[in-house]
Image (tube, rainbow over all chains, first blue to last red; front, side, top):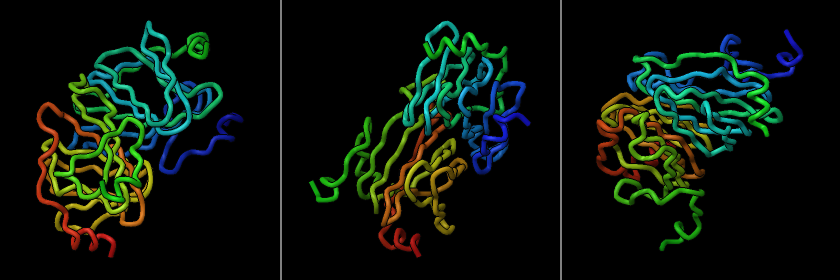
Length: 137
Length: 137
């Protein structure tokens, strides 16, 4: 276990986000049961400082609602966008993007995935250190 | 304007919830543009103490995520359920229910309505004072 992991406390009800698709330490807390009649997958994701997910897409889009700390959302080819609590982003189907904490703060958002039975996420390559640092410029 | 209204400050970006469907003072802040490609309607709703919406249903269900204060969620024929920040409720299509603040605290939740192009809400009768007080018992 790295020092980073030892120093990070999992939020109640959350488990570690999969290392294959996240760089750094992040936590995922499901908010809706599996196979819910709303056909939505909704979860609270907390990124420790420096953590972010890989580039990815959602076949039916996604809505993010920032609820704590400060983080970034970036669509491929566009500048990264700083997100604060109370701000939301709507992501159209198949748009390549990533999200995560800043280097200096935790970040928590609610992630809303509609029409989940038709697919939730397609994972792509990691966000490189260069790409991540560029978001802070 | 009543004393209750004068004492209540609208959260940034929010407008007053319609009096026809809400008892007391509540505020709605849209978090997703109209006709979004995700086909979701997502909003932050803040209820002042004593405020609640009418009994209602959603044709495609709804997910509520509590983010501030303390409030109630009640399905017709079941006991009211107290909600705290970080807790969520998944509401199946066509289930008759209401939500709102307690008598003694503000309550904020995010409301997620999927498949919005197929309908968002069907409003029914008001939650009576007797029904509302019974939630607190």
